[in-house]
Image (tube, rainbow, N blue to C red; front, side, top):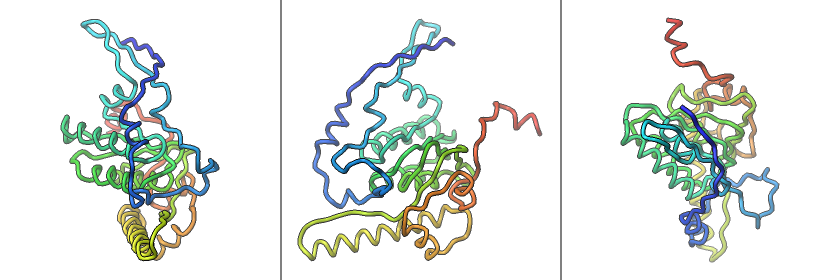
Length: 253
């Protein structure tokens, strides 16, 4: 089957709605990667804003053209690239629900390369991963930091992978609020409650038995791990050196 790659820029009206919309301060509670050297006023670049490659394939009836991400979706592959925000969350949730409706038993592969982002947006993806019947395999490439690491850990048991030179970073959530003293106190209680909830999620998915106190200690600061350290910590199950050929495991039996 012949395939041709084209690079075409496609604007997104939905992205503009999220960018210009008004969101409450509570929705901004998120993992703020302190290691990010970008200035606060600079917007984090999104993969969706880049020119999107298109794939043109020959079929029995002629030619079929689709963007690369739609083509990957046909193979039940979801890519989470960039900041975890409402736009990414809406796309990921929609893709997960669509793939479950298409085949509720067939696995889904989710490739993650993200510095983290909004807790509410990330938890929407996480809850959907656990809600659908399809097992979700997670693969870390590049980096899975903060909320990205939680999504990585939330994959199906025994099916969480990391590439050899990828990294993982965990830390506690951060947020800010201005207003009346009573409102500030309420928001402080809320972010502490979110921190406890996230720690318990990590505890449920880490393969090694760790107490909440141990997890809180690791989460106090930005805690970086390379591929082997992430496996030893229990966030992922295996390092993937190279994809195995189809049927290879069956041939060994």
